Structures are given as C-alpha cells and as structure tokens.
Image (cartoon, rainbow, N blue to C red; front, side):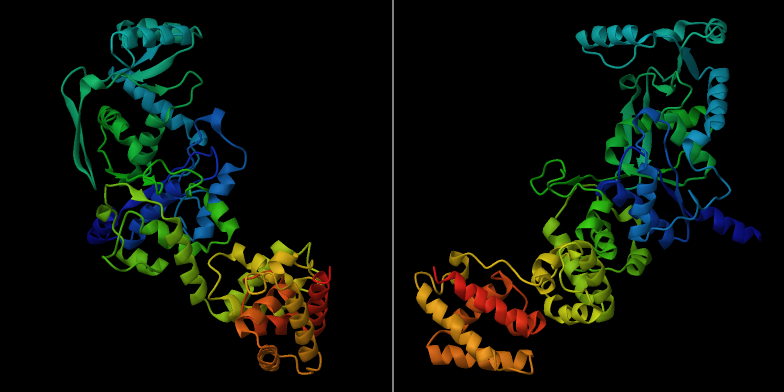
Amino acid sequence: MSGDAGAAAADRPRLRYAPSPTGDPHVGNIRTALWSWLHARRHGGAFIVRIEDTDQARAVPGAEERILESLRWLGIDWDEGPGIEGPHAPYVQSQRLPLYGEAVDRLLAAGSAYRCFDTPEQLAAIREERRARGAFGYDGRCRAIAPAEAEARAAAGEPFVVRLRMPDDGSTAFHDAIRGEIRVENATLDDFVILKSDGFPTYHLAHVVDDHAMRITHVTRGDEWIPSTPRHVRLIEALGWEPPTYVHTPVILGPDGGKLSKRHGARSVLEYADEGYLPEALLNFLAITGWALDDHTEILSREELARHFDIGELVPNPAVFDTQKLEWMNGVYLRQLDASRLADLFEARLARDLLREAQRPLDRALVEAIVPLVRERVKLLAELAPMVDFLFTGDIAPPEQEALLGKPYRGRAAEAQHALNACYAALDPIERWTAEPIEVALRATAEELGERAGSLFMLCRVAVTGRAVTPPLFETMELVGRERTLARLRSAEQTLRY
C-alpha cells in the first residue's frame, strides 16, 4: 500500500454497534446502529458489530441471535463481527477477558487505579452516610490502602474490585460531534469500578479497551451516556490513548412528549417485522427521525440514505416517534412494489395468518387477483388477512340483523329481505361470473326496487363478506365466486325472516 493509500485508509471512519444481549433490540437502540452504519457507508469506512456480554447476570438466552437477525432483516450488514471474523476478533467481550486484565494491570502499576475491598454492607453504609450529607458516589477510602498490602490481600483470596483514581479538582472536557464541547467539574466524579469482583470488566473499561483495540473512530450511543463520558475520557487518558469522536444521539419521545413506551412504538425490530412492516420502510423512518436531507424529502431508499447521511448533521433535540407517519410510509413502500413482489408478500402473510382457518386453497392466482383490489388500502401486511379472509372460507357466519341492515335499512327488515331476494334472482342467471355483469345486474335491481344503489350495494356487501368495509364490491363478489355469493345472499335473507 502506498503512503497516500495508507493515509486514505487511516482516515476512513470505523463505527460500531455494541449491544448487550439482554433482550431484543428496540427501535431507539437500532436507530443508533443504523446511523453508525450509514455514516460508515457514506464515507467508505467500516461498520463493526461487537457483543458486550460482560454483564453475565442479565444476559438472555437467544438475545444475541435476535440482535443479529434484526440487523439482517433491516439490511444492515457488517464488515467485522459475529460470523465475519476480522483482524480484531473475537467480537464477543466475554471472549476478550485477557485484554481487559492487561489494561487493569497497567493502570494498577501506574497508580491510576487501586484495589478496593469494601463489602456490600460497607458500601451501603457509605452511600447512606454520604446521602445524609448531600454527597453522592464513592468516598475513595480504599485509596489509602498501600499497593503492597492490597496486592497481598488479593493474593490471599479476599474479594475486591478495581476502581479508577479520578482527579479531585479541575474539570474534564470532551467534544461531542453534534453538541460541541461538554465540560464537567471533576469534583462531581467519583472513583468508579472498572473491574468487578468476578473478574469481569464493567462497561466503562471493556468498551474503552475494545474501541481502542478495534480502532473505532466514532462512538455513537444514546445521550443518557453523556454523564459517564468524562469518566471514559479520564480512563482513556490514563491508558495513554487518544479519545474517539463522541456522538451522543438524541432520545426518541412518545407523541405525548414523555418517554417512548411500548404503547407509543417502543417495540423491538422483530415485533415490527411480525406486524407486517417492510424493512425498507422502518429503516427509512428511523433514519430521518432525528436527521433530515432537506425540509421536504421523506422517502429515501437505503442507497440514497447511504449517499447523503452524515452523523454530524444529527440534531441534538429529542425526536418524536410518529406511528401514523411510519404506517403511512409503510403504505407508500407497499404501493411502490411491483405486482409480483407484492403477491409474494401477500401469499406469505396469508399462508401464515389464514392457514389453519382457510377452507379454500391459497392458490397463487387468487392472491394475484387480490393485489390490485387492496394495494391502495393496505398499510401493514397484518391488515391483509382481516380484509380478505372471507375469500378463503367456505362460508361465513350470517351477519347479525342490526349489522346487516345498517343505516340504509334500519327499521326496514322486510324491504331488506325483499331486496336480497331480488339480488339473488338477478345474479343467479349470470354464467360469466365477472365484475362487469355483476355490476350491471345489481344496478338494474336497485333501479327496479327504487332503492339507492349505494344502499343496496352495502346490503350485499355485508351479506357476502360479513363486513361493511371491503375491497371494491363487484370485483370482490367475482373472487368470492358464484356459488358462495348466492349461498351467502340466501343465508343473509333467511336471518331476516325471524
């Protein structure tokens, strides 16, 4: 590699997504990963996935697999990480313990850290005593233990943690890519734990060591980590390293301005997939929830996002999770699909949602015939089955009389019964069962009866489908089929006899 090429490679950003396997990743967590991925792709850099599992007590079986599945579903690929071993493997923290031990030894030898032997009871008493005085955090009493004594006690098997020695005065500053300089008084920072008594590092130590070893240039994470960043900066300085660029991403709020809850959309990515959202729609929505290309463009493909996105353009203010906008966007993406691809999605979704109940084969021709009838109506794939399930059953339960009559025939059960008989008589002779002759017959019937066409059509709609809202009536009756349509009209008419 030439000198120029080497310098260019060194300038390429390296960003990482480092989730803890404590559950399925929610949308706020994945949004930060997406932004990191887009920035890396925009600037010809690398995107690394690292599993931070040092908190073994909170690890959830299967969580790592679901994290990776969420990324794959969204189309977020990684250059290094699980399954794609790169030069900085392994990419699971519990497999990197020797690296953290080496860093701790360096800090202890330099006097930048110290062993601490406080018991849980002693720590509780310290917290209580300091709280009573309006102070918080650890009081640093283990600093007074001579290094030789601390080493001897550790060698004898006495449990201990390792704490970083923080400055007592002055301040610590760091630069955030979207917030500028942030400065904190050192007096507000206590000596924090970097190595737990079980020999595992805390998040503070592990991510600092790994980010340095993996040459991470940008640390992207939620803004709840801002108060901890001065500690990380001090730890990096104690190890003699240069800090990365920090990017503390804005939080997502619910529509009411409060914390995003499950009710507002704080679900996992895989839950959104299960509900019938398209990956490209969710990716587009998350990318622009806190960033914008301009003041009017909202629909952006994955390629367009990767071409234009820059992490330094994020806004620091919280963003609002707009579920209605996400649903609208999903509908836009569904309508943009060609008929064959949409039929594939419909077929898979109907096979999943109707397989047990269907009494009519889920044949491809029927699914393809549904596509033009509902593509303008469906915003979520989960909406499809309730919209067309009557097409796949041999029969439907006769509608309740009140629902069948609706507003047009309320209080006119006898007239509705007569109208259904007239519709049956008009449709029965039709041999070429298609939408056009069905429409001609029903319009003529409405005129003969002196009924408004819309009122008669609604009566037929509820009788044939069991609901008041369906795809276009005549095309729907065509797909229901002649025998089923006539049988349902007769069944509905019979409900009005009593």
